[in-house]
Length: 289
Image (cartoon, rainbow, N blue to C red; front, side, top):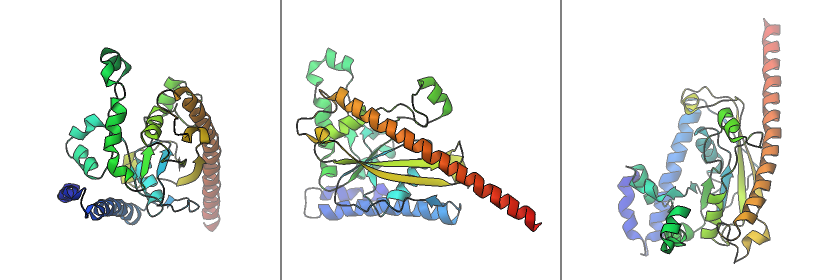
C-alpha cells in the first residue's frame, strides 16, 4: 500500500509538498487505526491508556520507552494516536536495502543514520563528522514540521536472562544505550526540549507477539510523563555525541535510574491490584455457587 503512493515523493520541493506529506501521515494513521480496530473488536484487547497525556502537535517529541515485546509498539501507537505525531525511528542506513521494509520506511519519512566505528575513522580520518552530516541530510523532511522520534534505548527486548547477563543495576530495565539519543539531540540541535517518557506495564511477567495475536493478553497499562531536558543540554554548543558525551551519559543514567524506580513501583501496584481483583472474582463466584 505504501509503495502505491510513492510517486507523491516527486512532489517534494513543489507547492504540493505539504499535501504529499499529509497523505503519508494519513496512510500511517490509517494503518495504526486498522490495527487498533482488529485488536479491540477481534482479539478483545483493551489497552489501559494514560488519559493525562497532553495533546501536542506543535513541537518535536523525543519518545523513550522500555521494551519487553514487539507488543510494546502497538500499545505505544495506541497511546500516541490523536495525541502526538506518530513516531519515526532512526534507521541504520544499511536497512534501506531491506526489501519492502527499507523502501517503505524511506517513503514514510523515517530518517536513516550512518555511523562509523572508531576503527574506521582511525583508518580513514576523513570520515570524522561525515556520519553526522549524512544523518542531518536524511532529517530534512523530518525537520520541516513537528514530528516524533522514538527510541528503545535498551537496544533489545528485556528478559531475565539478558538482565542477568548484563548484571544490570536496574530492577526492571536493562542498561541503556544512550549513544543513539545523544546522536539524535546533536543531529537536531535545540529542536527537542523534553523527553516524552512512556512506560509499558504488563500484568503477566512474560509476553510475546503470539500472546497478542491469540488474545492471551492480560492488563497492559501505559504511564506517560514529560521530562524536561536541562538547560545545559539545550546550549547551542552542546555536543551530546562528541565532546559532552560523558556529561550526557551521566545525566541520562540518572534519568534511567529514576525511570526504573518508578516502573518498579507502578508494576508492583498493577500486579497487586490484579491479584486483589482476581481474588474478589473467585470469592464472588464461589458464593454464587
